[in-house]
Image (cartoon, rainbow, N blue to C red; front, top):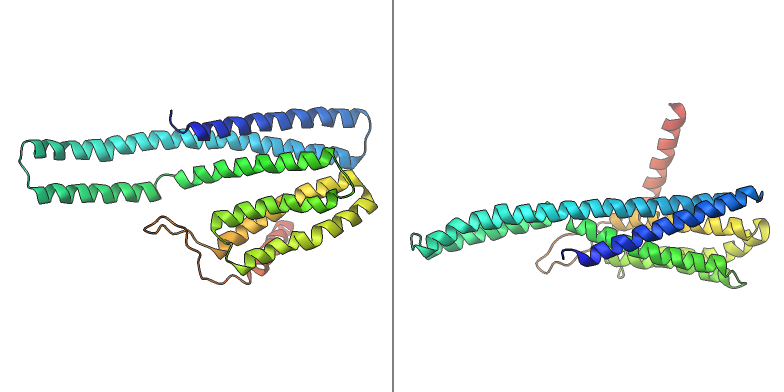
Length: 268
């Protein structure tokens, strides 16, 4: 069965998204009917949005996987079977020389390799699969901290940020980059102290909502920064090489771009 592992991950992600959606809807109804505070309702809305994202993402990846399977079959039939069959027939009847056969096979191999690396979204599908698995681990960790909140939970919030940091750093092969370790130090130094302060000021429900939103924002910002720090190039061994281009002003450029977009939106 083609892509059995990937399809299993999609099914698990889809069911997890449905479970999060169901729980968030029930919780939203209970909190609204009992007249609980705004922070409880916002937490339910955040979980509802995440469940929608997880379910929709699983369906989207499944669609891309089916497209990939169809494209791979068509490429095999068109480039391998159709092109190789005449060559083999000519070899069988000894109508071509050995050098011509070798040249045809070399051209065919180069074209297949080129299509494999540029035309098919294999890398994208694999990345989506890993994102879904990491999202599942992240949500489980968050729910565990939400249901079993203790005095030392603010220190464990760092784990939510580090889950994304380890995943993104591994994807872009940035463990040897000083900038990546500097980004890791931001939540380690800030999150525990700020969590204790926020808990004492506005309570645990609001704190959990802030941690959830800021950890996802941290993951997205670090993903953009990691793309800026590195570039993927296919070498002879298929490894990912880190770009030597400096990106020290990355956050300045992104902040300036965001402010410019906000100003344009206000003027429109």
